[in-house]
Length: 513
Image (tube, rainbow, N blue to C red; front, side, top):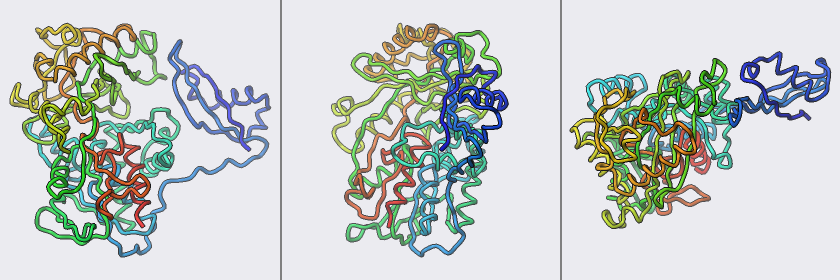
C-alpha cells in the first residue's frame, strides 16, 4: 500500500521534483533507493502567513508498482444502439451527457442553437467592438456553452455528486494541462478551452454521435406523458426516444416554451449584483502580504461571504488576472461576467459581488408564477441598458458606491465595450444596493486595502445561476411530469459551474435506460 503524506514547501521549491523527492524520503525516514515512485495528489496554497504550498503526496516504497489512475471515457467506435436520445445544448452538461450515452451504448443526437467555437469567436469580436449582440451566438450560447469563453474554472464542491476525477481526466485526454488533476483550484483558461472543446466534439462524432449546430429547439410534441418528437428551427420534426435538456441558465425561450406547453417549471432563488475590478497587484499584496509575489505564486484570488442588511452577500466567479466581458444574450440588456486566460497574467482581477434573491424579493412585483424570478432578473438588466441604450456598462468607483456618490471620473477598466459613470443604486433594487454597500464595507475591514476608490464596480452581474428550476425526481432524474425528459445542468437548476454541470450531464445520461 502506498504511503500518503503532506509537505509544506516554499514556493520556489514546490515545483522542483528532485527536492520534493528528497523531502518525501526525509519525511518517511527512508533512503532514496527505497522510494520507488511518488506522485502529487493535490497542490494548494496556504497564504495565512508567509505563502507556502501544501502538497499531498502518494509514495510507493520498496518496488511497489504505482497504481494507474482511471482515465476518462471509453468512446467506442462500435455500432451504437438505435435509440435516439436528443441532447439539447452542447455546453458542459450536454458534452458529458453525450459522452456518457456513447459509453453506455446509446446514440446521442446533439442540437446546439449556437455556432462552433471558431465561428462563435467572430460574433464575440463584433459584440466587443460594434456592441451588437447575436442572440444565438454570444458568451452564453454556442459550442461549449458559457464556460468556453468565460474562464474555464474547474473548481467544484460537488464531490459527492459523481466522479470529479473522470471529468478532469476527460479534459486532460482532450488537451488540458495535467496540472488540473492536482491543483486545488484547477483552471484551463479561455484561450485554451476552445481547442479542447473542439477535440471533445471530434471524439463524439468519431464514436458515432451526431452534433448539429445552428439547431434550435423550437417546439416538442407530447403523447401519453412522453416527448414523442422535437421540432428544430421551426420546421424539422425529429422523433426521439428521450430528451436530455441541457440548455444553460440563459435559455429564456426554453423556459417560456415549457411554460406555454404546461410543462411544470418553478421560479427559484438566484443571485444578482455587480462585478468588482481591482488592480491585480493590490489583491496580490493583500493576500500574500508581500509587494512582489514572484514567479512561483499564481495571481492571488479571494472568496468572500457575509450577511448584510438581512441578505447574503458573496463573491462569485473570481477571475485573477482577467477581464470583464459582456454576457448579454439579447438586445436591450446589459449583463457582465468575467474570465481569465490560462496564465492569468492580466493587470486586473475581477469578481462577481452579488446578493441572494429570494421569493420574498420578487413576489410583490412579479407574483408567484414560474417565470417571476426571470422577470425580476430581466428588469434589472434592461434598466442597465436603458442608461445608454447600449451595452456600454454603468460603473462607479467602490468607495463612491458605498457612500452613494456619483464618480466624477472612472479608472481604467478591462470591459472592452466601455463603461460610463452612473449611480448604480438607481439601477439596482434597493435591497441589493443596500446589501452590497454594507457587504463591501465589511469586506474592506476583513481584507485591509480591499476597500478603495481605485476599485471599480460594473453592472450588472445577473447570470449567476438559473432563475428557474425544472423539477425532476431525485432518484431517476426524470421530469416529475414527463417520463422521458431529463432536465439537466445549470439551466434546469441542478448545477453551478463547468464540473458540476458535467457531473449532472453524466448522471442524467446514466439514468436513461
